Amino acid sequence: MTDYDYTFKIMLLGDASVGKTSLTLRYISGFFLEDLKLTIGVDFYSKTSDFNNNKVKLQIWDFGGEERFRFLLSQYCKGANGAFFLYDITNRITLDHLPDWTQIIREHAGDVPIMLIGSKLDLERFRAVPREDGILAAKKYNLTSFVELSSKTGQNVEKAFDVMTETLIDKATTKKS
Image (tube, rainbow, N blue to C red; front, side, top):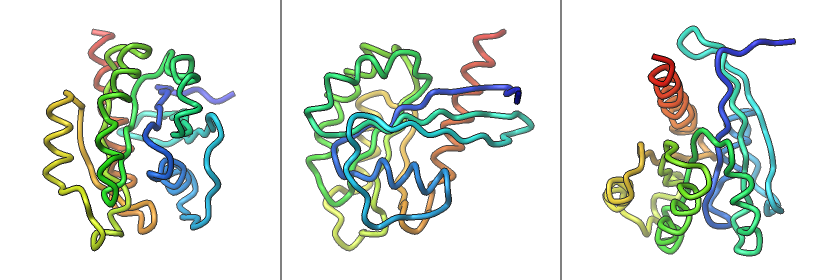
C-alpha cells in the first residue's frame, strides 16, 4: 500500500464544453483528444506525483456541466479541498455563470481555494473574453488564482495543477501549526 503525504480532492466545474475533461486527460495522460463525449454526471480520476519532496495524490472530480446534472453537485462537493472553475475564452456566457458555480461550491465545500481557468487559449484568434476580464472576475469573486491555458497544446496545464497543489499544501500545513 502506498502512503501519501497529502491527498486532495479537486472539483472541476464549469459549463458544458468548456474543456474540463480535456484538461483532466491532458494532465493525467499528457494527451489531447479531439472528440470527447459530454460528461454524464461526474467522472473520477487520480494522479500521484512528487511535489516539493511530498508524495501528493490528487483526486480529480470532473463534473458534467449541463444544467440537468447540477442537482448532484452538492453531494460531490462534500470533502473537496479545492476547485477549478473553467470558462471558455471564446464564449463569454461561460464566464458569466461563475457566480452560480462559486456559490454552490462555497455552500457545500466551504472556504476552499477556487482557481479561475480560462480554457482554449489555442483559440486566441476567436477570443471573446479579454484576459483582463478573467483577472477582474477572479478578484471580484475572491478566487485564489487565475490562469489561462490550452489543453490542446499543454500550455499552462501543469502550472494550473502545480499552483493548486502548492496552495493546498500551504493550507494544510497552516492548519497543522
